[in-house]
Length: 299
Image (cartoon, rainbow, N blue to C red):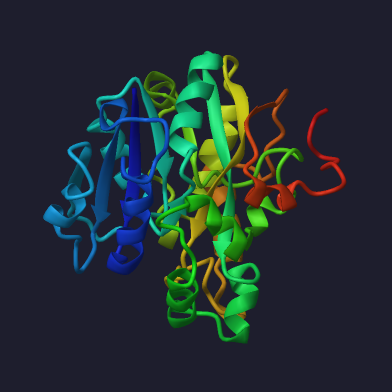
């Protein structure tokens, strides 16, 4: 039913945890036969061990993309081309762990809404958004200690207890879509009809390719935007070119310029015509139902 494409680049430490949270042992109310996980190594200097990937389940597959491009766009499209599911879900940054109901709830939402475009909120592990917490000493070592003290392997929803909302998801649950889709799922045919990820985005990390694809999906006339409740991705600290860049090296101006050059217009936040909310709220996630609606989101 569902093919999950996860792109990784030089992140053995982080990918091991991400794939553990995607495994049939961690995901609830689904079987291995319900979904597959396609891991695309996007030009990594040290690719993942295929045996370690496939050890997570018979539904895990590993591909190496031999490229010098620092953008994940081509890797996403490669992964989708290998997909066998009727639906696809994309994790552009393989450093993002996931909550234990995200596969089952995504499948349920896709069954409930024809042409659904299903998104989940993004969180950062640690006490604050990582662009702030890294300035106060947060990094891989602190994160390893945090995860070692948290029972995430027994209950993945405990990741909410040690995380903060990502800036792209700052409005929390029930206040509109995130500006960036760290988890986005839809019919595979709809993904292909949209042309996939635009490979003209060649900036490190893909620039705003993720945001561009989300806006393109939401503007499709048949799309029905769906926001998952109580499920999320959790970003691990890995020295990413944008999320974990120091203030004087953040590439956002370059990203904005690339977006404008490709699309002929400045980037703007997604404004879906309507929005469906779907799912349940585990108790660990309820503190992220924030007061005050996003005034830019439709009622």
